[in-house]
Length: 364
Image 1 (cartoon, rainbow, N blue to C red):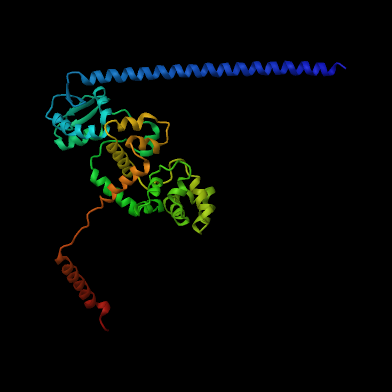
Image 2 (image 1 turned 90 degrees about the horizontal axis):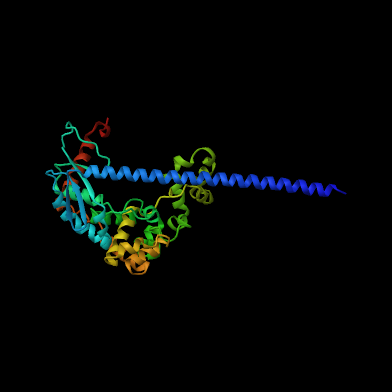
């Protein structure tokens, strides 16, 4: 009669011991997490201190050049920093708008060094080392490609694939996008070229993360070409070798599964950095002085909504305007002079004559 009571008592004691052990484990893990958090904060504070001291050291005995909101700390040298800053500032200001004012608190640090590699140079861990014999145009390019703006949020950075910087070769970039629209092995990009704005949205990666494979490469032939071309070395061995062979033989289901197994971000984008960055440039141009701030204001929102907010217009209208700019940037056709045809014909006749006189064509 007492056995059920003893069993219940033993189970209660075991449960209490187990709960106590779990509480002890949780407390120990929480203490370890708190310790790691404190160590991380201390390491961050130390790194900030080291960086601050290095910046102070880098700025000793140097001049500060101010052009607009640009602040450039540099040592006296023949380097045409002020002239280059005067040319770079309007370009930077036109891209970042009112946000460019933040650069007053984020100076460039430029170390102008002797171009003679045999001359010893002091070691600095912050700033840009620049030979002092660079010309003005090269210094302008250097300033535009190293603007010390705070980096954008990870979502925008990952979508772009590279930092957003002022366009150094805007016409060249637009011509590159035109070529991508024509030649990219993606139905979405080709239909964008033909004027389907919804397919442009897909090709630019703004249709949502889910279903990129189907949006970018909707046809079985495109998916098979990706597997057997770009990823042949990756899939044609080990556990995926049989699926690869089935895909190469026409099995679209195998092709699709292989491509879906790729790590995140590995699927080739139909339109690359130039296309995405030029879309951002158009949005910022259309949106006015505060467009860049609006683009970064709500990092948790979908990127399509953020670009529309920055431009102050619906996404379809923005993408349509972007496409118009890209189509207007078609690379110039190379026109041959009239005599080129005659020269080509003469060379053809010469080679044909040499071939006919060779021993291979003579009667024996």
